Structure formats: C-alpha cells, structure tokens
Length: 123
Image (cartoon, rainbow, N blue to C red; front, side, top):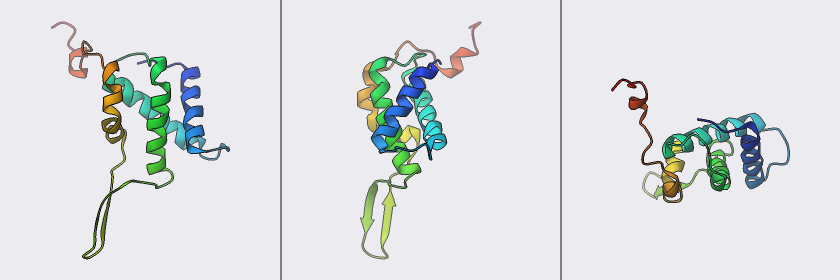
C-alpha cells in the first residue's frame, strides 16, 4: 500500500486545520493517528493508492479520531440516571470507518485480494 510523503503531509495539514491546531505541539500524535487512518482506509477499500477524492475524507476521519483520543472529546452513546452511568462511543480506526462507510463505499475495490489470499500465490 502506497501513499507518498507529500500526500501524507497534505492530509496531516488538513487534519490539523480541522482540529484548529496552530502549533506543532501534538504533531507526533496527530501524525500517528493520521497515518493509521490512511492505512485503515487503504485496507478497508482494498486499494494500494489513495485517490485524491479521499484526502479530505481521511482528514475528517483522522480529526474525529484525534478528538476522541487526543482531546478526549468522545461522543456520548447513552446516559442512565439511576447510579449515574455514561457510556461513550469507542474510538478506533475501525469504529470511525464504520461511521464513514457509506462515503467510502464507491472506493471499495471488490476485486481486491484478501490478506489470506496474498500468501497463497500458488493456489
């Protein structure tokens, strides 16, 4: 799976813009989350190259995950009054992909090979 450094920097820059980050203070963590999201999208769609149309979407997905992980702004799923219980949405790249799955659908490569098929070239 391949994404150029320039593409990664552009998505990172867009993610920081969406998060309102002006400083480089949290760059390493935001970069890690952005790279993880890029790899998750490539894997989910079974594609090797990230189409330009997905740059903004991946940045939005990365920002959503960053808000949950870095800034602890997770979405509340449910609230109970008795014994006060608050349940937050889980935050992982897979959960974020589930939220954005409808927008990713046109980019899913239906002819892509599964991980289990890659090692079995002789089959």
